[in-house]
Image 1 (cartoon, rainbow, N blue to C red):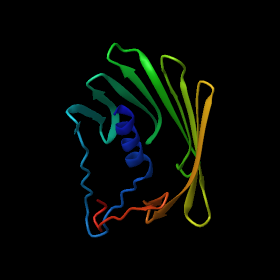
Image 2 (cartoon, helix red, strand yellow; image 1 turned 60 degrees about the vertical axis):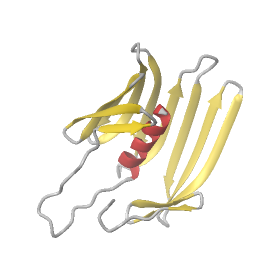
Image 3 (cartoon, rainbow, N blue to C red; image 1 turned 120 degrees about the horizontal axis):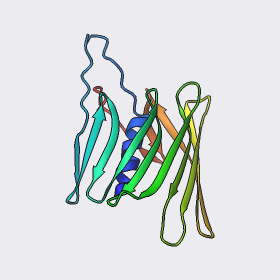
Length: 165
């Protein structure tokens, strides 16, 4: 479940874009502070508008920034032992171009890498590879953006209202 929450938060922070309404003189930002999923509670903590950590029932995730960009997430179990690290690389336009992940497992680590290529037609090519023991899993897909929002991944279409919801 922790992976689902982390992946969801990453999608929100990495790909979502907020635009200021030209008619408004002040932008109102609403940040979630608690997620309840199947009885498990996650508490999100911020420094200003930056997510600093997420506390779970059985551990926590700690976020590291370079300016406004997340460059690393460390995951700890309830005893404080590091269980996984996710690192992020960005290009000069602050777009995510690479994600590396190492997650500890009893038998062997899960080592994952994803790359993102920003194409001239406005799509993003996403390639990923995961190694676990002697097994390697690879995947590739195209992400389509409309007005900075994800509109299509793997044939699944997404739509948004005019209020950036």
